[in-house]
Image (cartoon, rainbow, N blue to C red):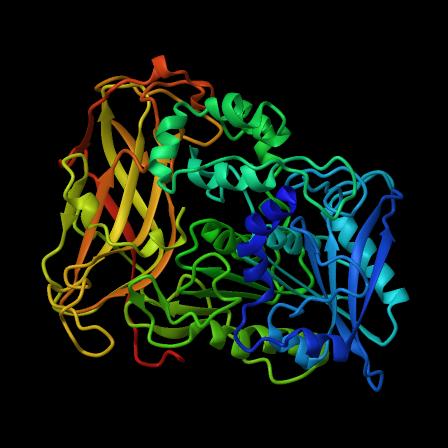
Length: 597
């Protein structure tokens, strides 16, 4: 029973995000009354069988498109007489009429074979033994088309987070029947800025939490996860990870070398061949299905993946219908709930409902059923600050992008990406730069590029740069009152870390020379935010972000294998002179008044 409880707690957030929340749910009785559930092993080209659940409409008066979701997170409940309460990307799909298919990926849960995290794509295959997620998707679709009655010959795919990776992988060398794919917050490159690493820095709290719950290996097909629970008694994650000490203690105290991928991460501390093989972006070439990549501006896990999968398809698949949707959401926040607020920050409309009804459903209806008009733009993005949807024919917007320097002239709770930063601004080890009160709205669009001249007395250091919207001292709430906590609120708009030893390339770690200035420049994922008149723009620069990011010992070495003795104090400096300027660049966008809303 303990193992069953662990599985429910670990995957509750993922499954809730993937399959919708209670709002406008179909309900168990509706699904049972209108769908027949089948469970089936589907054989792949190498003989391995993948466990698959198919929900088929009971109304046989017409044909239906197929929607496929491939996941490592279990397609429970198992048993032909046990139904999901909701099926499809949102409850709207079950009522619209689709054949909904879920599949345990190779080596997970009830599927046979060997599981491999973000299995590398093989662009050249010499025979049926050369398999990857693209071939498993192709073989699954082929079987479904031949064996599921009343299908209309068209297939779509979707997935959020890790399932988003499988959606992206499935559209490579796609089956001709695969017409529409929506990778949502997809894992794309686990050493760049997805999940476990951001510019070479290790996201300790997120990685430990995920692997301690979902990272234990499977030994046989099973409906019950056999991973053992880890006692993390204190609710204070800062204190827990402080007690953990150096990262290598995670293995010694908790994982006991029984988690192969964790062991591999600890050995591969730069972007070497191991990590490059698990970067899906170079393989997104000649994509044939229509693609709609979805992400959240406040997604702490896979903001990078959403933007970069879109960019990779755009660059490598000319002629492909390639749509980007970015809303004011945390990880998977578009799939359930209203999306009207995040923490203390309000968005003035039900953005998640709008996405499900006006963007997601019409996309699949059009490409899989020739239903409704195709009126989606190239980029459908939510402008935070002014809280409105914008439509563009490219992202970032092509109209008048110019460099903008906020403040610097010469130079893994989900809601942390909008949290108040006043606690940090008051610390002596955080540098703070801010503009005067703005006399007009300022809209920033596109990537944020910190370019810093720095030095450290150690041989390595982390550099964290945060872009912040400072509210007026008196800020009205939704009822117009100003007696609230939003006055002088410092809303984090975007923040990112750069592990200094990777300043010249994630595959080329290089120590600092103590006290010698060096340039650290990196790209932070895109923003689309308006700083309103009366607000101020702030930049904060710091050197630790614990326990979101593991502690840098300030010494050039494999940090994952560092001991207590390796950690040392260091002094970091930011230079702001004509010869060594430090600045933050980002595109400045000015609306013309003709944009669609």
